[in-house]
Length: 293
Image (cartoon, rainbow, N blue to C red; front, side, top):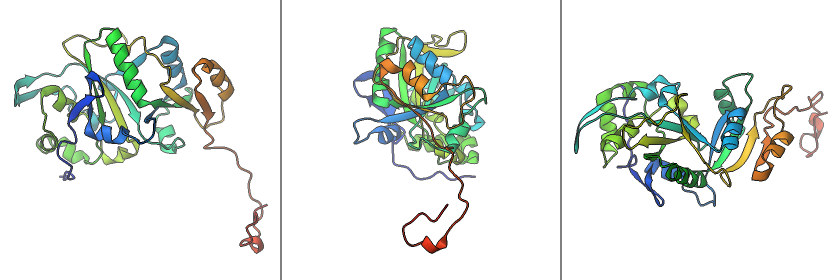
């Protein structure tokens, strides 16, 4: 059985995020996102066509955690919690989630390969100003009169799969790292653990949780936040690092498409062609000259 790594007390607890009364962030996420820099950037890898839909329709879409691919991160999805300190039973409502990475490696092969769902779908890496995005999200939620709360959380990668599967040890480790264990708070914390093999993702999750039993999903099983203002939210877009097939979006096309938003758009040069070296002249090795020709 795996052993839980020691943590600071209450590092999973949520606190109000800024002036947003319906928005909460846990300390792990706050530590990752608090930056001395003016902007706090998170990234999302996604198909270009979806990004165009988001901006074109002024929407932000959240999906059910049911769509997460790793079975171990959703072991406790839909789990009823009994005998809470101040609540006899908690039956979780349907929640929606949108995931980002805090990783700054724009040319990470692991990311480009992991999120490439189809050879026919062009992938982009979108860099968001996180603080601006949350402010705009909460304004849209208020304008749309959505009765929901937002929870912002960093994912924990310190546990192995045997520990996660062991309900007693897993829940106990969460309780030991929390001072607040009401139903929804504890439930969200149960959905914040992935195995060590996924640690490179450095993931930030934004959950939408309904305040009542209202269904937040549409007929396509997507939670859509309408009237989302993208001004100053997107800082940069990277096109995936492959030779573009006919019909795919080029850097110039995307720059023109999003011209009014003044977004920086670049083609990743991860696989940029480099001339082969035919001869290495060791005589010039320590002369600071080009030894390859």
